[in-house]
Structures are given as structure tokens and as C-alpha cells.
Figure 1 (cartoon, rainbow, N blue to C red):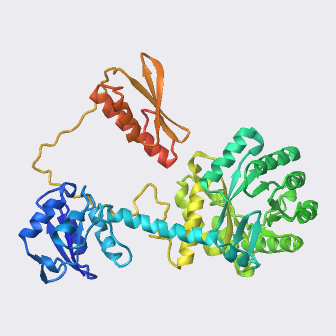
Figure 2 (cartoon, one colour):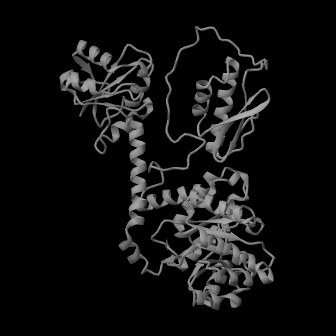
Figure 3 (cartoon, helix red, strand yellow):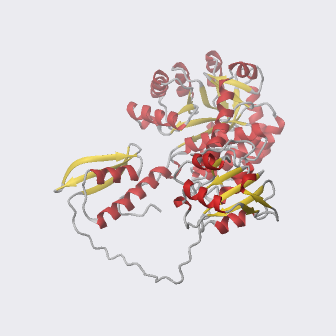
Length: 527
């Protein structure tokens, strides 16, 4: 296909560099006498194309008259629709990407997607990738007949209304840590937050070494009465387990060699599943080597053969004693037990590692997928792991799509890239060597304006609290910095340029902090 690409002066070199060796289409380039692509108009394009009939290819030695062009691709930043170009020249004309670096990606997908005359190609492509990715998840979840058939296999089970196993996406189990210390209101708020974040199941985390059976009953019942979601209880205390069962718990965490005799009959009577451990915490026994863990887990599984079990080989924190050995144990257990459901305590690693959790969760989620894990388990017990439920849900979806498409988890429509860039963004190079260079100085001077603002993050919103004459008079709130500063300007609440610049800086910091789940304190850096 003969394709003509329109660009501006500043982006010309980027386009030529990216397309000089491109061989899927016969490409032609027309550079408009305008430095910035956003200033190019359909009228300008039509005028200059009518002036030059013969075009020279940028990836071959060919030439062609304009009438032989099959498609025109304009800059994605062009403000107007490309319909007028098509109308005037009778050549299909569409918007390309907003960034010149995405031009090859745009050309690569021309056979699979119809470009838009009004929407930039990169947005169209990313949206299409996301839609395709979520279609795989949603269509799989909506196929009830297929789910019922899959649940007939030994490798899949149903916990309340949640199917899980080797044929389903990994389910995210969110632990409400230290649940006995929370009020009913806080417990429900935490559960709602987990559900909104994508949790498939909610876990009530009890206090180790304590005996609070009535609290176990009350908390499980509270969640069950208010939400239609599977609920588990995380304790080795047999009294708490049995009371959790009476309250309607759908899953027990956990059963080991030290407590199984006290709870197994009750678990069987209630027809629920249990996570089994290779330990005997009543004797402070934790098997250390991979083979010891596997054999101990297989032994407790046989002792619990009258109930449905999910195996937790125990994922160790790094160097305590060994994350590597625990993954080896998981792999060994999987090879010896190919259809057994597996449990992955991801929070054991991410909570005890000073690193951003999204990359940790992506990697552990990939390992879990390869091992055939069914449940990803985590609390959100520290500031650095806030958002872990959402991250693991995204990880689960990424790995399921990757598995279904038999491809690596890259460029599949969803990702966990937040602080770096997944796609290159080449900006135009601007020559400045002949311009005077001014070293900026911040002198810290400030003149009181007619209105001042205290900016905070609260309720998942940016809030700008207006003070006039040292009294709070209003709160302007939104998700974005732009919405707030435009409202401030509309209402004529400030009058000084330096104050406007300061507010813009602080509001943008607040928006970044909100997006990244970071703390924001006005006048302090967020990194």
C-alpha cells in the first residue's frame, strides 16, 4: 500500500529515522512548512499537496503522483478532523499517532484496525488493545456453560460463587490484617475498598496467639451479611476456625499438622475448602528444605482427604530463610501433584521488601502463573504496599491473557508500568545553542494574595481548602489539578501570577501523588 505521511519540520528527522528501513508499505513523506505538528491544518495540507504532484518514497527509490496514494496519515496532534483532506483529494485520510515514535506501530496494525479521522492512532490502538484484553477476561467469566464444564475437573473448584483452579484466572484474596482491632465501620470500609480494588475474596486476619472466637464469628458474619463475596478466616486457632465456620466462612486459612484433628470434621460438615500448610505451629515446626516441605504438605493433604484442600507451600521472604528455595518447593510440589490447587502468599515477599510493589507483584504473578497457582494472597499492611490488591488483580488479568494468547505479558493491552514508560516518546529536537541561556533563581519571596489554599488528599480526591482573612470558607475538590485550578480562576479567587504558578505546581504534585498512591504534604517533595 502507498501511504503518505504528513509531518512538521521538528518531527521530520524522527519520522525518517523510524521509517528508513521499514518495508511493509511503500512510504512517502510530506513535510509541512510548520515547525509544530499541532499547528498543521487540513487546509494547509490540501494546499501543499496540490502544489506538488510527484512524491519521492522515503524507504525505496520509487516516486509516485499524489493521485496514486492509497492513504494519507496526518499528525495525531492536528486539531481538526482529517475528513476535509479526504473530501478535497479523494484519498482516504486518517489521523496518525500523537508521538512520532509510534508511527511504526501505527503502520504495523493497519490490516487489523481502522484508523480514525478524529481520534489519534495511538489512543485508538491502546484502547483497542485494552478492549481486546478485557474481552478475553469478560467473555471467559460470562460463559456459564463453559464454567460448569470446567468445574467438573479435579483441578477446579467453586468457593461460594467464585470458580478457581488451573483453568481460571488467579483469584486475589485480600487479607484485612489485624481485623480484631477494627470497628465494624472500619472493617466494612476496608472490605469495600478491597472489593473496589478488584479482590475476588476477603480474608479476616486474626491475631496469632490470641483466642477470640466470638470476634471471629462476628466479623465473618458482618462481611457475609453486607457483601456477596467469598469470605475466609486466617487463623490456626481451632476455636476461631470453628466459630468462623458457624458464621458462614467459605474458606479456612489454615490447617496444619497441629490443628487439623480439631477442625477437620467441622470443615467437612460445612462443606467448605481449607488451605493446608506443611507446618506444625503447635510444636514450632516449619520444614526448611524444599523436599521436606513438599513431603510434609503431601502428608497433611492425605490426612485431610475428606475435605477440599488448597496447598500453601509457604512463600518465604527474601533471605528469611530463602525465597528461591520456597519457589523451588512450589515447583517440586506442582510436578508431583499436577492437578492440586496452589496458594501463593505474595504479601510475605512484597511486605518485607523495600521496593515498589507493582514490579514485585508482576514478577511473582508471572511465576505463580507458570506454577499453576489459583490464589494470590496479600494484605495491604504498609504504606509502600498500598494498592497491592489492585496490582495483583491487574497481574492476574495480564497473566491469564498471556496464557490464553500463548504469548509473553508485553503489549497485551494492560500493564503495571506506572513510574517508567512502556512506549518511547521521541520529542522534537530544538536547536538552542545560539539563544541566551538564563540561570533561573528561586528567591522564595511571597506576597499575600486575596485567597490562600491548603491542599490535601482525602477520600481519593484532591481538595483545595480556601482561606480568606485566615478563615476557611470553601473546599474545591476534584480528581485532577486542572479541574481545580480552572475552578479557582473561574471564581477569581487569586490575583497574583506567582501564586498561580505556585498553585499549579502544588496541585500537579498532589495529582501525581494521588495516581501513585503516595503521601502528599504541601510544600514537601513527593519523591
